Length: 231
Figure 1 (tube, rainbow, N blue to C red):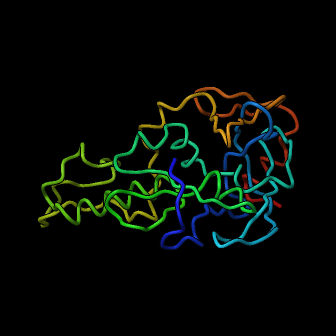
Figure 2: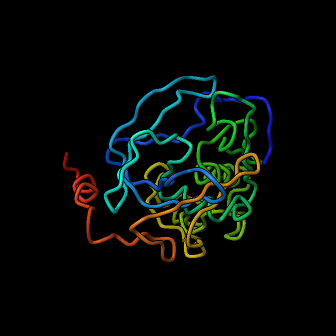
């Protein structure tokens, strides 16, 4: 993982989550391992600011009803980002992670952002955004010479579109809701390390199976209400 000076849009490197968003969150992020589980965002709180953006904590409700009302933003990620993080940047052509030396902003120092080999000094908040931006740039440069194996998300492209001399996206990048086939390769849980330490989990009522959380039969009423958009 590279550590370097701030680049373009350094103040916008963080993945943001809104109330009601379905995410993956870390339960008890301390010790030797990390255990991540499906959750719903209940609220967020601004706790500081750095040159890499606002520093937030999130109040999340896990599937079994357990809550964490002051979870560091570093330990909350979208469902897609969780799948991609399990796979790692090696699963995507030309995508690398980049962290920043900062004593007050753990997100910037440990989780950081992503860059690609084709998009210059632009920083991306998620692996998927970086991989798709690289696909866009590759098509822009090479047109109909692009092959499926050159793309990170070939399923999102019509490589031989009608009435066009270049590939076209089937759906605009920001509207894509395709479950990447690569997610099938995901392990049972995500483990990340920070400064040589990983973060464990001691207890949870929901279990992980093939990258999906199994909802416990009790104590998950609030999770279901939030998931359904109720307050």
